[in-house]
Amino acid sequence: MRLVRFLMKLSNESVVVELKNSTVVAGTITGVDVSMNTHMKNVKFTVKGKPPVSMDHLTIRGNNVRYVILPDSIPLDTLLVDDAKRLPKLGKVAAGRGRGRGGRGRGTAKKR
Image 1 (cartoon, rainbow, N blue to C red):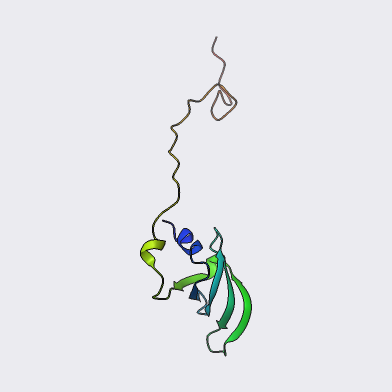
Image 2 (image 1 turned 180 degrees about the vertical axis):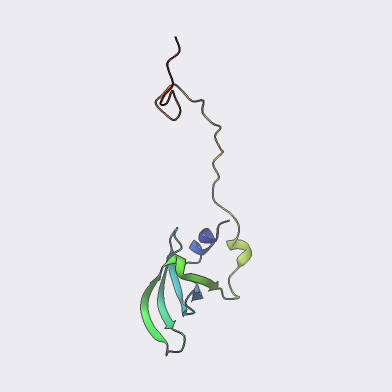
């Protein structure tokens, strides 16, 4: 299971997120999208060396996340079950005589 899919299941859970710039964000996850952008509510935002700031809502860009610290009360065994439907892989389709890659190219003569 991909990490993003796991985080998407954490809606309404209180977590602590540490960012790459050592900022610590504690709050309740309202949602996570496929880019790992995390939307939170009731947030306590603590920049290193400064007093904490409380916010109603906050969105964290996914590439800024270093750690997501989960509470001990989360049932990891049930959340880690991969319930996504997998589609069977299709084999390659034979190439036709379309205008795709390849062909005669520059400098090659047509055979007669």
